[in-house]
Structures are given as C-alpha cells and as structure tokens.
Length: 244
Ligand code: GLP
Image 1 (cartoon, rainbow, N blue to C red):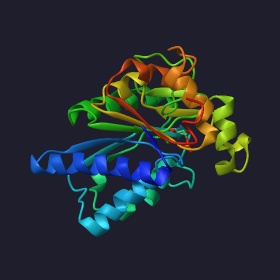
Image 2: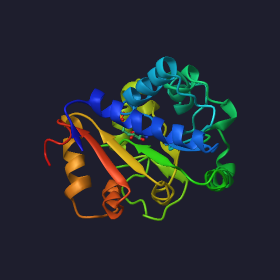
Image 3: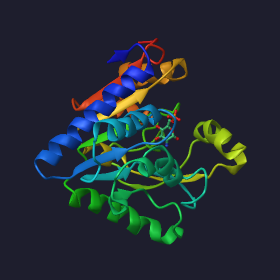
C-alpha cells in the first residue's frame, strides 16, 4: 500500500496496532507486539503515544518483543535499542516494564545462545506475536538478518554487513565504533507472527524495496522471503515505492 507521505502511513499502522490492542483487551488477553527500531517506525510510536494521551489507549495488556540489539551493547548506552525504545515509546505509555523484552546485548558471548533459545520460548509462552513491525536495511536485512540468513533461522548472534555498519556510523560517531555483531530474531521467528508490517520511507529505500517486492526470492536479499507469505503488508510512501 502506497501512501502520500510517511505521516499518513504511520498513522494507519498505529491505528492497526491500536485496534489489535483494543480487541485483545475486550477479550481480557495480552496483545503481543513485535517492535522495530531505526528511524522508520518513529512516527508510528509518536501516533501510539498520542492515542494513549488523547484517546485513552492503554498498554496495560501489551507485551512487547523487540527484533534486535547490537552486540556488545550496554542497555543504558545512548545507541542501545533499549534507550531508543524507552525514549520513543515505553517512557510515554502505561506499559508494565516487566512485559518489555529486548535482546540482551550485554551478555558474555557464551551465554548468548541460551538467551536466544529462551527468547523464542518466551514469545511462544505468550502465544506468539500478534503483529511484527519491520523496517528494511539497504542490504535487504529485516531485523539484523543480513544476506545469507536462512528462511528458518531463529534468534541468534549475527555479524553485521559493512553497509549496515556504514549506515549506522552517524549514530556512533564513525563506523569503527559500530559493533560488529547483533542479536536478532530470525527470519523463522518473524514468519511465525500472525501479521507482518514492513514500512519504508523515501527514495533512499526505493532500490531495496524494488528488490524485496519484485526480485527473485533469495537469501541474498532476506526481505524477499516476505513474498512467500500472504500475512505480509508493505506500507510505503511515494518515495520508497518510486521504482515499483
Ligand atoms: C536497523 C535495524 C533494522 C531497521 C533497519 C533500517 O539497523 N536493525 O531493524 O529496520 O536498520 O533502519 P532505518 O529505519 O533507520 O532506516
């Protein structure tokens, strides 16, 4: 779906999420949200905060699982996805802090595999993700599933692509300061979500959106796997859709 601009598109995505939360509330159930970081979802979170403040949308029944985190990364660092989520959403809504899950970038490497296994178990324990939000990296990554990721991959430690580290360099004051690795949900984890919403804005994403939507399905561009599911929606602005 192509929108005139990212504000309209983000409002539409936020409305969908709010509807899921409200429907679950009516049934006294948790809404299990898979959340993403990066600049792409920021206006969705802004709209959710507005719905909380102005329309009384409550997050009391919301359980969240974030896609990824840099590794190594201390949770209180300015670049951590913990800081990002707190600043852009969690600090502004009535979510129960114990319902928030973000991959731990601060573990000793030998404990990461067990952590990843438990992360998957926790998602299953809450009944699976009702919806997963995604951005897209210029390598075609979703989460931090870089080229070469297998379609059945689970949550794991991965090595970041050079282009991904270059794109992140402004947040870290230079590419050399960007961590080499990340902990990410796998393609398989993402695919288990009941609904998947990939968002992309501006001409900067037009080339990779063309590959993701129209290209041959291949691990070279992990986002092409999304073509295999009918539970996926691409939400674009005119810029990111300009090469389709
Ligand atoms: C980041 C995140 C991804 C995100 C992508 C695009 O590195 N790990 O989950 O979708 O890259 O980022 P942005 O939204 O800032 O363009």
